[in-house]
Amino acid sequence: MITFEMNDRKKIGLGLTTCGVVFSTLGIMFFFDKGLIAMGNILFFSGLTLTIGVTSTLRFLIKPRNLKGSTSFGVGFFLVIIGWPILGMILEAYGFVVLFRGFWPTLSVFLPQVPVLGWLIRLPYIKSFFDQNSSKRVPV
Image (cartoon, rainbow, N blue to C red; front, side, top):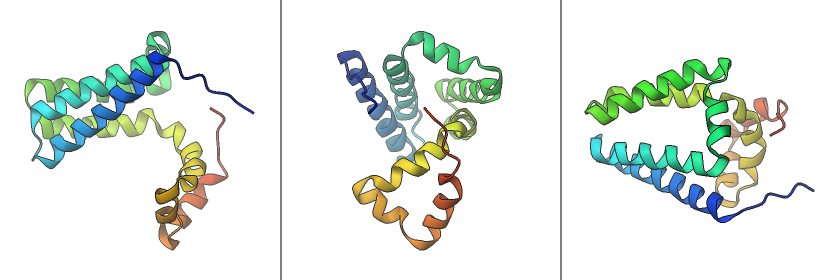
């Protein structure tokens, strides 16, 4: 059995990451409010850094296969900060998908086990999409 140690730094990191997602979602809901989106970006990035560590974050971002996603996410982050939230969020979304595409097979196995979300994922059209990726699970 794999154990996952949850120290205070990781708890704070997960809290900051969650707050970052909430702020970004609110920023999008409020017609791309640049202040909320910028705050969400800062909280998300700092939470990710606290959760996995500074060196692991840097190693992840500068891997050659992640360079395109990191660049896109960084340019999008900069555009949101200077006041162009729509274009910035489009670039950030692309960068996010490119950066985390390797985690999708693992998520496709884990998400159906979540209580409420699992029920939605078991719907016929969504289930067929998840079944395509569940056999390609990568170890994390």
